[in-house]
Length: 272
Image (cartoon, rainbow, N blue to C red; front, side, top):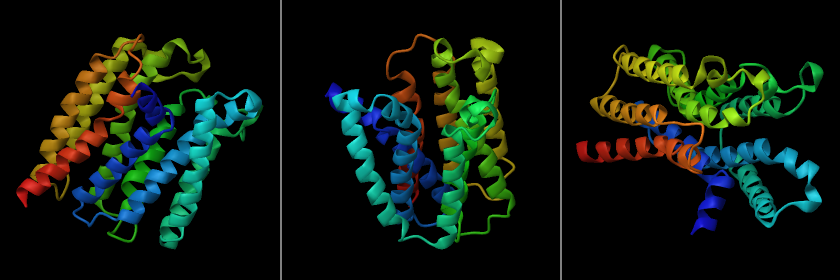
């Protein structure tokens, strides 16, 4: 069971389910039908993107000495990529073009396109904003392309809320990685310290809730589920430590959007 759990987390299946859950939340909030092909595309794309970011450097430097687990992840990722290419051709050109733009940002995150052979991840203070931007684009704008007008107030607010939510969700990871991250990364936890980073996270979550009240159309289901999940995320941020258990951030914190999606689906079923 431990080996299965390790593979589930290490192969990015868990984070992919998190991204898909946020995309479904957008569909539910805007009361559009859940697009199975798009959800599958987001799931496969998240696994491909994250495994490239996490393992391309390792594979290049230690290809001959890869552990059995990493080789398995390599094979798994290649099969996922082939499935991604197949699903890609089931989607509209607008979705494909937007996805390509998000993919380009992901490549800039790992490839040395900037001065001194640096990538986006290495630029001081940029990492968390890049992650939040890409996640917001993929989970808010992508599900709404061709389904509703993107240039409207509620879409803008949903994007801002999602950006802030992912920002707050990333803080426990930054606190955990304080002992590993180089000082020049200038992460929120490095710049402000653990205590202030937690305060910033809670204030951001409060702002997310307040933004829900200024939407033109917001359902009681969306509001209640958002408040419940926000309370849970606040607790996990407050309890974050530099010395965390192995799965505190990578499983429990990152799994909050999955719980949010299930809660929203359950509430919709009850209301129906």
